[in-house]
Length: 400
Image (cartoon, rainbow, N blue to C red; front, top):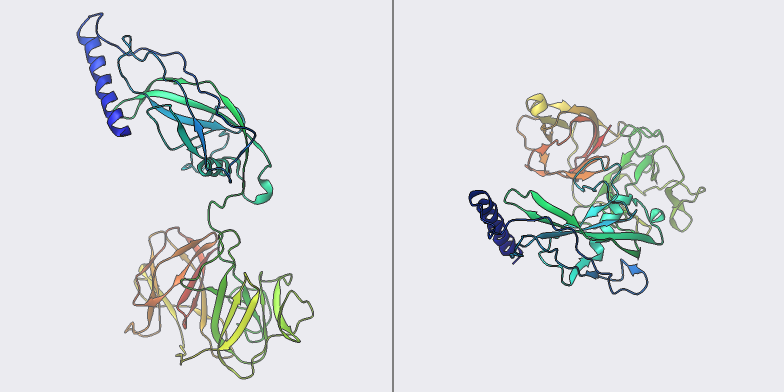
């Protein structure tokens, strides 16, 4: 219905403009400049709770006249909101830099000012972006909302004419913390005598190996917590888990009655016999399992990266484990935007190759490789630390 109104208005505007130019006839309607219109105070008692209430309803009068004979030209209305009371610089959600922005415009447009319903979740989202409430501690208990309405005639090129603004009404609102982008899954790292070079050092790839997200698993949007895994060879010499390589503030080890978290006196986690195991950590429930993996798994002498950057030749990765059976690989490599890449063994047959799609993280990308999967396409060029597990097909690219 709004599109019909706007189209009618545009035709009328064109007709008025032509009549005014071609005929010097005082009886023809022409566009005029209105001076004001009134935004009524909302019928609200107390503060607006943006989380508990679903909407705020506004009403305003139509500016008159938009033509000298009060002909039915329909303006387009938009609602503007400022937490500072200033309306100097509009916030643009698509811009990289919004320095100095002090108000935002709601996405919806209107052709009438009767009982206009504003969604409080949308208002809170814009406030979160504009005010940069990146964590719950930055959200104030109360925020001022200055609201005004803009009225304009919009032509076929979406240009605005005869723009005027209503008066400003002021409300107080209770905002809430809102996750704008889901948190990256929380990843722990394996370290120890059974892991990588067995040195208990902190160098990524050489000394510590990241655990992996699970395809299809769900992770908490705010914390990134959920179930993560690693499958590989354990020789029975012991290992632990750490949240941050090089630090022991957050760790998992072996206690008297099972696995324990953040116990500085805990021992190393060991297995009864060497073999392929799956280590599963649920970071939401704080439960850890170490179980013998089923099936047989080939052992590769080398895994390569191949792609457009090396004319689909073989660039060898480095095995993480150097003294025993290895299934994790790493390499640091410069890739350009648009490069395509896959993982393969050291034969020309491509009998073993893994591809797929990328899932973005703050620090890079990851995904779940499948046999014969699609080429992985690099969006942003740069140097990456690349991990690959030849049992699960999991890959992770960490931007350096």
